[in-house]
Length: 291
Image (cartoon, rainbow, N blue to C red; front, side):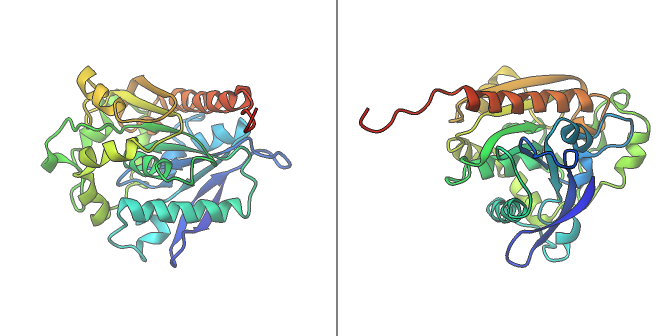
């Protein structure tokens, strides 16, 4: 694993982490890990216990794992003190991945593995018309379309939100995870915080333009989003994706990748990536025009 800096265009530089397969191996694909609000890229590189890091696991399985600090976090916080709206984040991510692809092999393309507010960015990216050709699929945890809390209880600029809602039951995490997690916490940019309130209304229009497979995962102790049958029906109904999966992760809180269930969740997410690649490889050849 090493630090990386990406050109997000318009003078924005994104910091982040990257882990690559063993020297000489071309990656099967690039897993782009997008963190949630109030966190940084290290969310996907937990060192609380061996085996919890997505970067370690993915690179050992032959993928490049790229975890950028989203716009308004890390090195870009100085240039974007208020952050960016969703459209701006999408454009910045697009430029950053183009910069990465210009320097590094990307195999079959990009697979977006996103947590919480990072899932909003993943869906927005997938809704772009000219992205799906290089986009393999989405795996999103900790994001729904119906809040389980009142709007004034949501995390925001200068308002971290209830600590217990972020983590869930303490037994779900190694004790050291809470100390290490302090290094990952960052202020939520004001623009991003404001858009959080609008998400239930924004989601259907974006979902209707997603044309790649999507998997949603909800932790057993998820407390920010409704996960009842009615709420899941509203989540899935607008999606135009060719395949949609909803999974429950037992013994996990909202911050799945920092808990005991991290390795289990990451393996399931990468298995979904494998299924997406298999579907591509096994797809029947397209009929030629006029035949």
